[in-house]
Image (cartoon, rainbow, N blue to C red):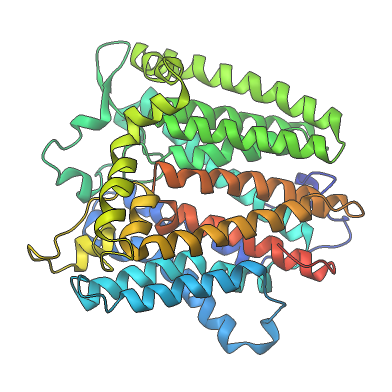
Length: 454
């Protein structure tokens, strides 16, 4: 990564004479890919839990440093009071009569806070647009490599697939059956996990690779770096198609649309046009590459997105979970059904009875209803809305193009994560950590520029 100053967009780049040393924020960004990637190595499944916990534990350790270091304090972001409200509600829910075990409930609470903690400590480590731009470059490299590995796992599965898949997946009755598809030569292929151990999990990082790759591809940097960025973006789209996670395709489209509209609102019409043209190219190019590697099932899977209106498509994919959330859980448990009744904390630490059995939750909306009911919806939803509005204000700054560019990228990326609440559980996963890390980082830069923050 030497020579990183020349690798950044001019609107975000630092003067050559101003060398900024690497710090914890850069290491943290790498760790969120590097630690889970350990699980693709042979024999690592026996320590899966410590490895998965470590990615969250780093965030908690950074928060402890933040609390113990008074000079790290900056003006609070508007979202922090909403986060305090979420944690207070979870603390009360810990003692809900339907919480199956204190250990499971506390583990669930810890996951929530580890995900949100970067909002507090990231501002102390990210002090300039240049550092934030470098972090985005790191995220692009990590997500881009992840995507390329995902493509290679379909091209040559014998060499590139993990030696062992997640024990959680393998313990299911049908094993890998639901996450396989028939390739063009008749072989059974597994949806690519990328640098993770769960089939299809490359789709999340691939969405970021697609967005960030295009952002850097239209920036004024060395031509070879622009080509690398564009290649990462194309690999991201191809990996999404091959993973068959249709919602990530839709989210990627939404993120790119949000960024193009932000560029237009910033009156950078030439950049917006260039971005839109390249986006169309990689959507088509990624599809052609994916179909050539994965066969007709890839084509048929994504064509179902256009078989009916979006609402009908969603009802066929996640509609039953959405309906259960509002037709059943809202009626039976309007203020929550106990803490630690779903997700990995429940699987590892829950002690269940017929009275408080585990509840299946595949979308964040269901999880919020279980964990705090309508109050959780209001508090976490409020935090996301306030955060998005703050990032929009930063993106619309007139007198600092570097800061505005950073604001636009973070806004687009985080809107994509927020949209995933309808089909995934991003805010108890590493995707949520990245959301609050970028939100906190942008806030740290903004307040140092004299703005209200993000």
